[in-house]
Amino acid sequence: MIYTILTMVKWLSILLVALVLIIATGILLFLKFAPAFGGRPDAETLARIKASKHFNGKTFINIVPTHASTIEIENMAATDSSEDGHILWQFLFPPKGKNPSQPLVSHQLALADSDPHSSSALKEGEFIWLGHSTVLFRAEGKTLITDPVFHRASPVPLGGKPFAMTDSPRVADLPFIDVVLISHDHYDHLDHRAIKQLVQQNKAGHFYVPLGVKAHLIRWGVSADKITEFDWYEEIILSENTPTKLTPSNPALVGKSAQNKRQLTTHELRLVFTPTRHFSGRRIKGHRTTLWGSWVAQSNKLSVYFSGDGGYSAEFANIGKHYGPFDIAFVEDGAYNERWRDVHMLPEESAQAGFDLGAKVVLPIHWGKFDLSTHHWREPVLRLKQAVADGNTKVSPERQIKLATPRIGERFNLDNLPNGAWWETEKQIQMANTKLAKSSA
Ligand SMILES: [Zn+2]
Image 1 (cartoon, rainbow, N blue to C red):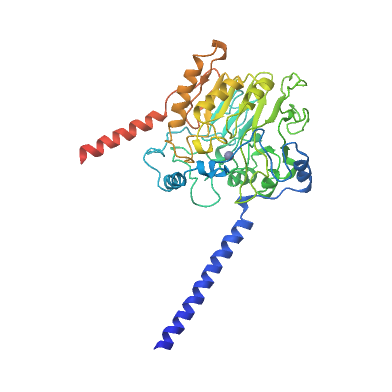
Image 2 (image 1 turned 120 degrees about the vertical axis):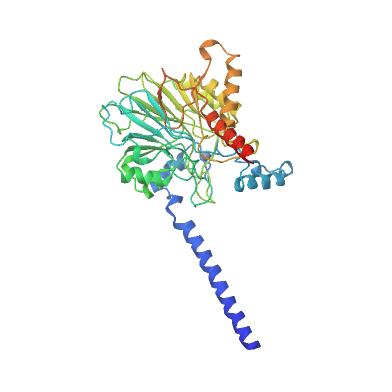
């Protein structure tokens, strides 16, 4: 009897060890080979990275000292570890209001296969915000998209799930995109499934990406000749007949003025990769080995700024001085927290960034799609609205900012700015449901 029990214990132990080994090997193989993590830069990119003024030999560095979170600050005495536990708890079990209680009412995106000359096609000067940092617009006969994200903002089926919507935008509903602008390689900005779909559905012309990001796209099927990597303040001018032919112009300009900025002619589009105060990385290790930033897109009729991610810094005024004023600025406003304020602005700072840039219109991005911080899902837009209103009382009328707040998927142009409080509809539904639940109790 004892012998039988001992044999059973022995075999169970072997089985347990084998199981642990199999799981550990699986995790290691996943971390090493899962496509979501992207690729490693080739020799050409590595040479450019090493030559960059913003690379310190190991990682890219911000223009001003920056910590990804207070956890990084050497003086840990200032950090309350119970607060970290509280934040983690809120991610695992979001309190009421942190996520919408009902599917967000969004507009259907139905631009697939549309003839650019048809009445339903996206028209010159039209914009569509697709939630978080994805914006579709048309300028100088080209269709542009920023940070195309259409799936979960996570490499694993945990966390980063998009909010439910009545019409969730899909890659299949997009028109052909001439210009894909990527701000950095974080999961909520660079969606490997969306990139694969753009390639498979033959929907993307050319990708303009930060230095080091080309390798990720190649891993997901984009051909190398369709990708151009940028360092900060590098720019190109796309012309009518050569939509992907590059005209390198200004070298890195941090802290200097763009004296050589030339006047654009009709059908030309200038793209400039501008700095932000942020970081990068898709793996547990190796953060900041690819660059991060924001984009300026300009024609002789339209001037657009797209912020990507970043904390507040004096660089917004610098960008405004070089390339402003902007007809519209898509400015990060969401997923903030005092603890990572260096790398994600608070709404009041987002408003200030709009004033620094010389933006005529600010459209808040980085909210309305993912639950990536601890605040209520509506808080970013409410705080920004107040901060812009306060700011407008302190500046001259020509420097005042208009706020654009379209629904997800809603098409608009600068003469017809959407400014409804659509997020309140969701609040009303929620209140009605609570009332109903109480009366039936
Ligand atoms: Zn980011």
